Each structure stands twice: as structure tokens, then as C-alpha cells.
Image 1 (cartoon, protein in one colour):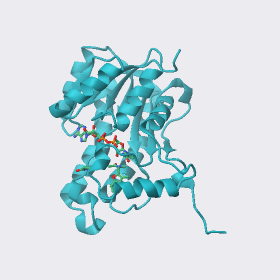
Image 2: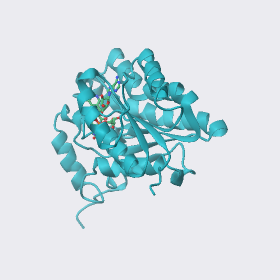
Image 3: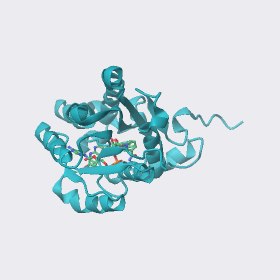
Image 4: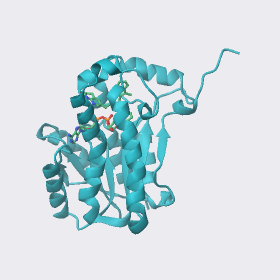
Length: 261
Ligand code: NAD
Ligand code: 0WE
């Protein structure tokens, strides 16, 4: 019997079978969790339908996290399948492409700063607000962050500032939802993975190689590895963990190559 047996999870952010959200959905389904998936736009629906079929789900709902109306409709639709649920996963980020290439001061604008924070951080709060009436006590929320939240990483730019906001969001949401409801809120901070979101990034291949050479495990992580940790954090096995950022990065963030001694 899996450690998520009798749990129900809504997973926001599947775009393809390479998505971190898909790694999370698969890992949770493997542990006996019932799954619902949401997708951003109609053009992703076919791919997400296929992913849903693979985890025996027929709940696939459109959700643009940039719109309160779309979020509200998502939960109305979810309610027609489930009276309540246990786990909400947020695996969504967006910043304007121009903001992710070049000198931070030069490429950041009021407009792309606001969008990055809206879609990559506030949307987690917005989903929690809308999910709240349907979420079971002792449920769990999870989001996906990156090391750029706490280090200035070349070209990650405004996304790093938005991830810092997302990580603070995790702590404030944990403080807001823990006391009365026992709802836990955590993040996994993943090492670089070649997903759709990464495919638009210049020199991503170099970044992947650099992470291999500068991590304790000397390899990159997979969406399956990120998924397994996410499944654990959202399960009762992690009932004492909330407000935490857990690194799934081959030890990159704690590793220093040192001089050649
Ligand atoms: P992905 O492209 O598969 O997933 C990103 C998702 O965000 C897509 O499903 C996209 O549809 C969704 N999205 C963007 N704007 C949206 C909106 N307005 N409404 C609804 N959905 C929207 O890429 P991924 O790498 O799996 O990214 C998932 C998360 O993982 C992101 O938060 C990203 O920052 C984080 N992350 C990625 C890496 C990496 O190297 N790939 C590393 C660490 C963290
Ligand atoms: O969070 C991310 C990327 C998220 C992302 C990706 C895109 C590409 C397409 C957000 N917005 C957009 N906008 C687009 O138009 N990662 C953790 C992956 C990533 O992106 C980087 C990285 C890493 C790692 C960008 C620069 C440097 C490193």
C-alpha cells in the first residue's frame, strides 16, 4: 500500500511529460494518490490528457493562474468530481523572455518585475485561497523553487527575485494555514532540468554541465527524483515538516569543489 493511499491531489503546471509537475504527479500516483491535473491553455490540453490517462485520471481542467476568474472556475469544476481534496501542487513560473538574458538592471522593467511576481509567487497564494474551502484538514501544499532565490545566478535575474518571494510565501502560508487546519506548506528547490521552461533559455546545456561538475553527486537530478521528494513532503510521513525548502539538487547548493590539493 502506497503512502498516499486515500489522498487526492490537484497538480497545477503540467505542460509535457518532461514537466517537473508530471514527475510529481507520477510519483504521487505510484504511492496510491488520486490525481487531477490542470493546464494553462487549450493548446496544452491534448498532451495533458495523455499524462492524465497515464496516472488513471480523467480530471483535466484549464487554469490560467494569472486570472482570478479562471482559478475560481477551476475549483468549481474540481468540485463536480471531488467534494474535497488533500494536496495542492504549484509548479508554475513565468517571466518575460527578455528579462532572463542580460544584465539584471538593464533588462528588468516595472512591467516584467510585476508579471514574474504575479505568475511565479502570488499565484501560489491565490490557488491556496481558492482551494481553502475544499482542502481537508492536515492537507499539504507544495511549490517548486530554484537556488536563484538565494544566490544571484547569471541571467536568472527577476525570476530569482520572484523565487525569493515564493520561498517567503511558503513560510507565511505555513504560518497562516498551520494553526487551525494543520495544513502544511513546503517547497522543493530543484537543480536544473531540461524541461519546456528551460528550452527557451540560452546556454542551458552549459548550466547542466556546470551543475554536474560542481555537485556532490556529479550528475543532474531527474523529475522522478524531484517527484519522489514532493510526494514524501505532501504525505503524512512528513507530518512534522512545514515552511521548509528542501533541496533536490545532487548536493550542488552545499558543495564546494575546493582547490586542487
Ligand atoms: P514546464 O514548462 O514544464 O512547467 C512550467 C509550467 O508553468 C507550464 O506547465 C506552464 O503552462 C505553466 N504556466 C506558466 N504560466 C502559467 C499561467 N499563467 N497559468 C497556468 N500555468 C502557467 O517547466 P518546469 O521546469 O517543469 O517548471 C515547473 C516549476 O519548476 C517552475 O516553478 C520552475 O521555476 C521550477 N523549476 C524548474 C527548474 C528547471 O531547471 N527546469 C529548476 C528548479 C525549479
Ligand atoms: O525557473 C526556471 C525557469 C522558469 C521560466 C522559464 C521561461 C522560459 C520561457 C520562466 N519564464 C520563462 N519565460 C519564457 O519566455 N528555471 C529554474 C530554469 C532556469 O531558467 C534559467 C536558469 C534556470 C536554471 C534562466 C537563466 C539562468 C538559469
